[in-house]
Image (cartoon, rainbow, N blue to C red):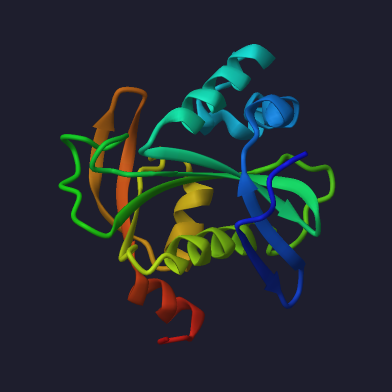
Length: 190
C-alpha cells in the first residue's frame, strides 16, 4: 500500500493534485515508463532499465538530502517531483546555498491527451508544497539551457535566471524563486 499524500491542492479548473513519497519498488514500473519516454530527455534516464530506475529511487529515498514524490492528478499518477538540499546535492560548489534554500526537479507524465494548463498547475502545486514548509524561503532549479518549455513555465511562477552554470551532465540556467516572487505570480501576498 502506497503512502498517504503529504500535500494536496485543488486547482479550480483541473481538480485535485496531491503528492506522496515515492515507493521505489511499487512505483518503479510507472516511473520507468515516464523517465525513459522521449519527452523526458532532460531527466537523463533514457537508457535505464526497470531495475536501474528502482535502484535510483531507492538511493534517493535513503539520502537525507534528497527525496522524491509521486504526483497524483485526481488520484492517478501524473507527475514526479524531487526535492533536494542544494547545500549538499546537485549544486555543491556552484551555488552558494543559504538557509531556506531548497532544490527541485519536476516531470509530468507523457500523455496522449494533454490538458490545457496541466503542466503549469503541476508546477504551482510543487511550489505550493515546497513553500508550505515555513523554513523554505527560496527554490533553486538548474534546468538544461535547451529546455525552453520549462524556462517559460519557471518564469511564469516567479523564477529568475541567475546565471548559466556547467554541471557534469549539462549546461544549465541556475534560477531562483523566493516565496514573495512566487506569491506575486499568484496574486497573493500572504
